[in-house]
Amino acid sequence: MPAQSKGEKVFRGIGVSAGVCRGKILVLHRARHLIARRELSEEKITPEISRFEKSLVQTRQQISEVQRKVVQNMGAKEGDIFEAHLLMLEDRMLVDEVIRMIREEKLNAEFAFHAVAERYTAALAGMNDEYLRERAGDMRDLSARVLDNLLDVADAFDLRHLSEPCILVSHDLSPSTTAQLDKKFVLGFATDIGGKTSHTAIMARSLGIPAVVGLQNVSQELDSGDYALLDGYNGTIIVNPTDQTFFEYGQLAKIRASLEEKLREIQKQPAVTLDGKSIHLSANIEDQNDVEAVTANGADGVGLFRTEFLFINRENSPTEEEQHKVYREVAAALKPQPVIIRTLDLGGDKFASHLQLAQEMNPFLGWRAIRFCLAQPVLFRAQLRAILRASAEGNVKMMYPMISGLDELNQANALVEKCKEELRAEKIPFDEKMEIGAMIEIPSAALIADALAQRVRFFSIGSNDLIQYTLAADRTNERVSHLYEPTHPAILRLIKMTVDAAHQHGIWAGVCGEIAGDPVLTPLLIGLGVDELSAAPRVVPQVKYIVRRLKLSETQALAEFALQCESPSEIYARCQKLARETAPSLFENKT
Ligand code: PEP
Ligand code: MG
Image (cartoon, rainbow, N blue to C red; front, side, top):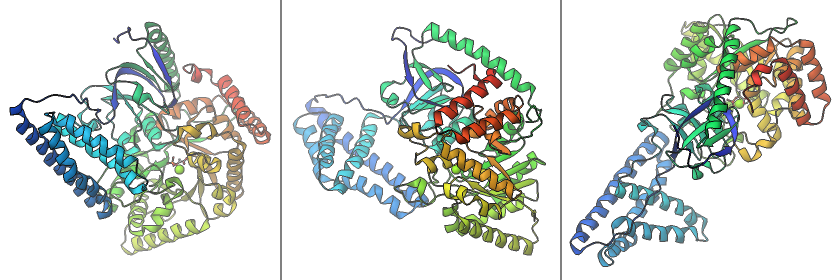
């Protein structure tokens, strides 16, 4: 049990992945070094200089190794970054000054090196020249590495060495690091920055790891070893929880268990309203391992297969064969239910280190998703062929992310046609009628939905991006999270416009962004005429639970109200009221 003496402290952020966990905290930052000042006796001076020189050789080897990997995976230009580190390491003035301090002032190597390195860093940071100022960061990095070696400290960010369960606390976690978290050891995580629809948050939900983001400077305030309770429902992390807190959370766990029971009872039931309106309820997945969760949570297939996770955390892109194997496995396992495979959506906050994606000023507005794929026809072709081939094995559909206009859609469709011709010539089977859809996640696409609707078989509204692009509020930035409002009238109008255009042209429209998994917003989306909802497998049962208790007529009345209301918060409050009245059990564990 935790020590009670330090007193309970509550930090509030944004709960992005449901669940409560408790355990010891592990703060991830590069080891902060405790630099002791030691005076050396005469005979210790020469060995100390050797120890310092050995640490430089060790550091050089490590940097060269990192550089080699970067050149191999990303290219020579990226590898050049490490040249600056190597040059600094070989800076004779710096090295001589440290050796002089050890020899003349008889001081230990880490103290001498730290003192000199700090002076260099401060001098660089104070330069007028921007290039030189930026080298201060390189100097800090290099200094940390040398001190790691002198003090024999392991790199704190290497998560492969976790040996006991913990709650990770860090400034940030990248989606690729999150994708590698081992549930056995990571009970939950908390970060200083981040938003609800960042891909880090989406990964956490998909892994079922409770998570809280946007906690400001929690990574500096907490220490490894502190005992904490992390509440992903309400977005809090409570350090040194009192007995009273434990008791309250015990009660919440009981409420949660009784809800789980209710949700299990409807697992095999359809998602249909009390007055008979059927909603296609599907799940979002990131790889083939998620298929089990799709079935276990009673979803009707997959509404969004985010294929980019097959491309990250590896040294090269998956081949057509490799992709085909994965897509086929998912399609065959869920057959006859549909599996909508989304073509690659790299960029934004998802990067594959082996592809040469240069840093951009505005990655979400840059070379991302379909833009990237159309410029990389070899890579795109492999994926299109893999998806087409999998369509012979199940009910596969395909959709393009980030369509902004007709040109992109036409270009992508032309490439598909070319792949089909090739496959026909090679006598490789595929479904000639495989349906192709467009994601509607850029305002321009919603505004020309009537034109797009004539060229695709379905729409899937990517509300995560649609909201960020419409309201100009970065989905990963907690400072603008107050502006990121799903019930903003502009968003509701764009959804309505998309759904109406789809229906006028005889196609269906779904939503696969995170709002599709929020039971508070389920009635509104149904009322707006959405035909399909696709959410993280774990929240599918809750959405189904509320759908089965709603009347289509009341959702339509809600949508009618929302479409003429000017206030996002008023609309949200009405949604909340209807949802809580309809399905109170879903909200009992929220404080
Ligand atoms: C979306 O933008 O809503 C979406 C589902 O795509 P992603 O979250 O992967 O960008
Ligand atoms: Mg998107």
